[in-house]
Image (cartoon, rainbow, N blue to C red; front, side):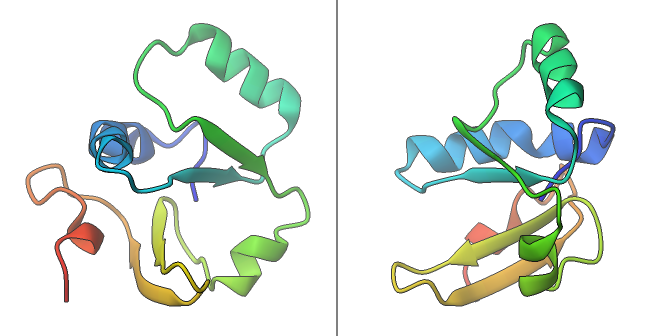
Length: 100
């Protein structure tokens, strides 16, 4: 869960790109308007997940208990939440992928 204005979200993008290269499906979910996303992607030149979902009603935000940006959710193949992490620290990387 991310936002175009979120600098911490952008800092995490290389780690998300690495996860995608390892075969982990990455979906970027935002509640922003399509026009905001269009402007962002027109200017942004860094790595970004291939799949972007717009959740204007914030149903997914509520369903996953998102209370901060960025929030990373690791979901298993059966659709169960394995881990959830809010925030990001470049020095630690994506702790959500490090295991229990």
